[in-house]
Length: 488
Image (cartoon, rainbow, N blue to C red; front, side, top):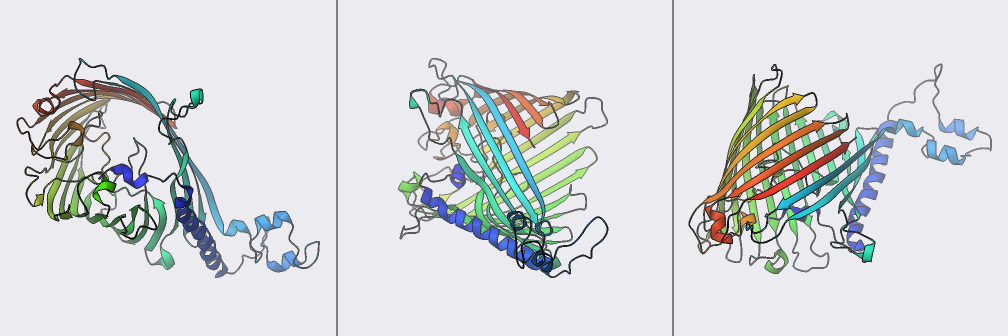
C-alpha cells in the first residue's frame, strides 16, 4: 500500500466538510462534558486574594439583572462560571523543517545519463490544544509541505498544486473517564506504536495521520488501544463503497521503567477500490496482520524483536495472502565513556512472492512503516521481499554533536516478485542474482540550540546484480542532505 494514501486530501472543498463538522461537534461536546464535570463540584469559598463568581454576582453587576458586558461573555460561561475553571490549560506546538538535498544517479544507476537533482523541501506545523475539566481535551494541528520554487509567482509556475495548509491532526479526547482507566480519542491523529515497524508517522517525510475513532484501556502496566477509521473515502455517492478502511488492536505490557516488555497486535486494512482506482490489476485487498514484539534493556544492551504474520485475500481471484516480516535489533551503548560510543546490529526478513501465477500472495506489506533511517539514509528499501543486514556505530565528538557510520546489505528474498522491492523495478520474467546492493552512510547529528537540531548526511549506494538485471546498469548513486529542525 502506498503510505501516502492516508494523508491524501481532495482538492474539492466539500469533501472536507465531514471532518470540519466532526471537529466542531467535538468542540461542543467537550465543553458540555467539561461543564457537567465542573458543575458536580461546589464552587470554592472566597479567600483573601481570590474570589469565586456565581450567577447572582452577575445579576447584581452594574447594568441590572442578568447583564453581561462583552468581556464577561468571554470570561464566563453562560451560567456564570469562570471560563478558567472549564479550560484548565491552553498550549501551543510549533515545528519547522527545511532540508536541502542532492541526488546523483538515483533513477537509472547509469552514469552515462545525467539525472542529477537538487531541491529544498519544507514542512511546517502549528498546533493549539486545550486541557478541559473532566479529563477532556482538544487539539488542532495544521501543516504545510512545500518545495522551494514549486509555488513560484514567476511565470505563475505551480508544479504540484500542493503548497497549501491542511489539517494534519484534529481530535477530541477524554482520559480516564470516571476513574475507570478508559478513554477515547476521536478525529484525525497519528498512530505510532513500537519501533514504527508497521505503524509510524513518517516524520522525515510529509507526515502520516489517520481519521479514526480510538478507545484506550489502561490498567496497571497494561495498555490496550483499539481503533477503526477511513484511510480513503473514495466517493460519498459511490454505490460500490470503494473505500479503504483501517482497524486495529494494539496492546503493550511494560515494566515500571517502560524499557522492557512485550506488544501484541492485530491490524486490518481493507481496500475495496477497483484495480483502476488503485493503479493495479487487483479488485480487492483484505489484509490482516497479527504480530508481537519483545523488547528488553539490561545494562549496556537493548534488544528488540518483532514478528508479524499476514493473511487474507488479494486480487480478482482471491489469492491467499501468506506472508511474514521479522525485524531484530541489538543496541550496545557505553554511557560512562567520554565519547559515549553506540553500536547497533540488525537483521530483517520480509517475504516475497516467487510465483505470481499461483494462488498465493507471499509478499509482505509493511503497511505504514517509518522507513527513515531504518534501513539506510537513502530510504530505498522497506521491509518487503528483502533480507536486510544492518551495522551502525556512532560516537559523541563534542557536546551536542554525534558522528557515525552505517553499513547495509540488501538481498531480494524472491527474485521473481512483481511488486517488491518497488524502488528497483521488480520483474517476474527475470531471476538471476538476489543481491540488491550495499549502502554506506556517514552522518553528523548536531543539537545547535535547545530547540534547533541539524543533521548532515551522505548515503552511497552500490547496486548489485539484481539491479543490473532490471536496469542493464549498476553504477553507484548518492544522496546528500542537510536537515534543519526547529521544534517548540
